[in-house]
Amino acid sequence: MINKLSTGRILSIDAFRGITILVMIFVNSVAGVQDIPAWMQHAHAEEDRMTFVDVVFPAFLFIVGMSIPFAINSRLAKGDSFWQLQRHILWRTLGLLVLGVFMVNTGGLNAAATGISMAVWALLFYVSVVLVWNVYTFKKSWITWCFKGAGIISLIVLGCIYRGGDDGSHYLTPQWWGILGLIGWAYFYACVVYQLFQGNSSAIFLMIAACTGFYILCQQPFMKEGALNWLTSQEGNAAHLSIVLCGMLLTLFYFDEDLDLKGSRLVSRVTGFALLLALAALWLRPSFKISKIHATPSWCLFSAAICVVVFSLLYFLIDVKRVSRWTSFFRPAGSNPLLTYILPDIVYFGMIALGLSLPAVLQQGLPGIIWCMCFAVAMLFVVKGLNKLHIRLQL
Image 1 (cartoon, rainbow, N blue to C red):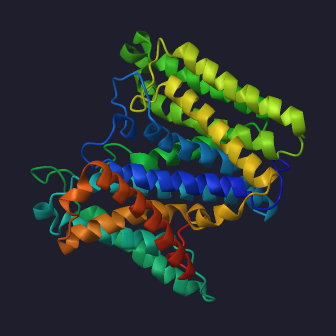
Image 2 (image 1 turned 30 degrees about the horizontal axis):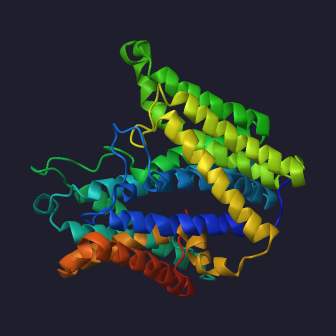
Image 3 (image 1 turned 30 degrees about the vertical axis):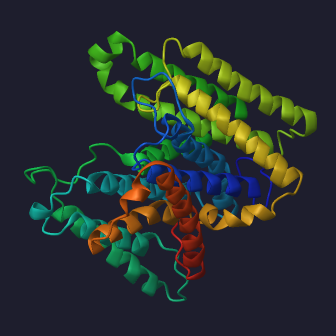
């Protein structure tokens, strides 16, 4: 064991994850609605501002960081060796990267060159995802591996036949890693940091500062023009890693029994952490404006500070005051986040394949916003039903 963490399911983390997924489905859906307020849209790359929409992705990163100490210590407690643990981390990372690459290439598919339509290719991809990463309950393991093997073969075939671009000359490549791919890289680096420093909270705090410093260093002219130019390709990963590490540090503050932060000591430590993140963001903002697209330090630190506050409020309400019955609504999504994440895409491509589309009235203004809210809630109910059918994805 690396840290002595509180045992049992932490409902506030599950609720935070479920709420984030619900908001994610809503903001992804509302992005296609016309005539919506600016505060419901992503800020443009060159603007010096952020909206609540720009906090959804960092909230995912933050929750990944909160979960890593529990996940690693759980596997160690079950008897995993060092190399078994590394194999698990690499497998999860690879899964996120593969999912990310497939998803970002879907929109650029050339149907004529590929031989099948974008919608059919995408639906086959998602079926393959379910086959590979579903949690099977068969007593005979060979049946499980038959399903997984079929999914892996299907992914390979889909990747090989893929052609993109106007002339169909582009192959399936990581033009960028996609949201899941970016999460995958941040997850991998965070696992390395956590193990390297053996869950030491002070070292993790310094690594947050180091990630921020690395991003700033990469912005300097001598880095962009000199022999070290290749390092600047990692500035985004460093920025995302800083958010993951903030989530990891907050988990240690709340749940590491060796730190023994309780009562006023816990409140002062968490409050000080949030204030420090916000003040650092303000200090850096004149030089590095708030920008999600550029993953600037001010955006990272403000987002992490917001996540610290939101989780702390949830923890106080759910785990301290025991007001937790309402969290049952979010629990299915929180326990099956990958399926919940891809489900709206499955619905979207399914509608395209069937030639269906939403009425124009639901694609603009207030009716569109209300529809997106209803759609997000409906997805959580669908996931609840899929959970009962034992369809649960786990990387």
